[in-house]
Amino acid sequence: MKKLSILFIGLFILTSCGDKEPTIDELIATGDTKVISQKKTELLNEKKELETEIKAIEKYLDKNTIKKDGALVSIETVNDTMYNHYIELQGNVDTKQNITLMPEMGGILTNVYVKEGQRVSKGQRLARIDDGGIAQNIEQMKVQAQLAKTTYERQERLWNQKIGSEIQYLQAKAGYESQQNAIRSMQQQLAKTIVTAPFSGVIDDVITEQGNTVSPGMTPLIRIVNLKDMYIDVEVPENYISSIQKGTEVMVEFPMLGKSVNSKVRQTSSFINPANRSFKIEIPVDNKEGNIKPNLTARLKINDYTSEEAILIPLAVISENQNGDQYIMIAADLKDGDQYKTAVAKRRLITTGKPSANMIEITSGLEKGDNIIIEGARSVKEDQQIRIKKA
Picture 1 (cartoon, rainbow, N blue to C red):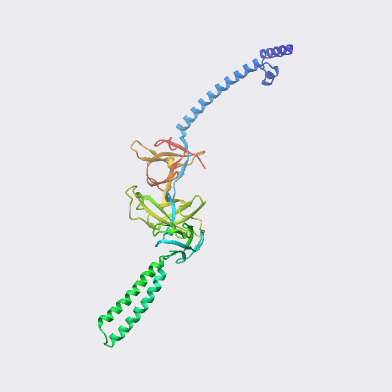
Picture 2 (tube, rainbow, N blue to C red):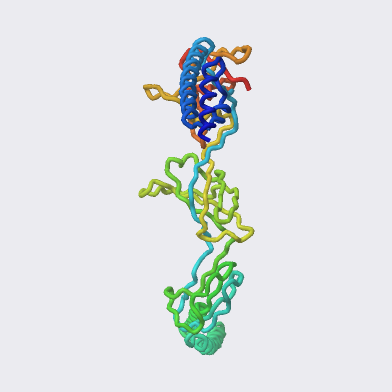
């Protein structure tokens, strides 16, 4: 094996002395790692020198091409378009018909006529509280009222016949009317022992069970909810008070449901909260499917501004001068060339309006048909020759 290695080395030396250098395959065939490593180092050095030379050539060519023919840029022709600007806010769903019923009278809750999830109609009886003997008292008072009525009618007939005194007639009349008033008052008290539905809806929770003692205005009995009249109540910063009014378009998104609905502002508050300088707006929500619940989170996109002929450009092409004025570069004197279109870069001062994502409205300084520089906008200067990429 040692003799074979010596033979290959000798062959390499003899070949290197000739006109032809050994190929890479021939070097590898010798199996001499030292010689192969030396060759690798030589090739790497040559590669580095070539890369340096190529970069120098490219730099020279780029520099002289820009001087001669102009920087290579891309342009976009300005057009007007319908533009809707939105502000995004977050709110919670609510309903005006979501209440917890309280007793108007104290006593024992003798009956609960409904259960959770049950649909009820307005005026339907929901529960009953022990009346404490009021019903019996009313029956006794009715008997007394009947006697007072009979007495009054007799005294009235006598008085009409000019028999008896006027004071007897008036006393009988007052007694009868007093009995009627007393009965009506007791009947009103009796009515308070019956808990009825103030509106049609669904029994969401039966809070107090039958048999418990309840106190007027203190013990929650039943919660009833109507999911038809749903709305979102949200606070809006005061600087939008002139742009968000009744009838303003709103897109409502419910992230947890994966659905969106369109609506309009139904009501705006006439009061500005001094704590956070905001005013409230109310937005109705259609809930035909019944899956929108009170306190559900909603994301709102409120259309605070619309322009039918807006000019929009990318935010990235806008620059500022030392005075803080905003400007863009446009391509003027556009001409056709063999490989590229050519033009002259011009600076144009602009006034911006409302932004939207990565675009912004231009309110002055640009007109329909202007060619703004997109790629290379920040690298060109006033009156510089430019080349334009053809589509």
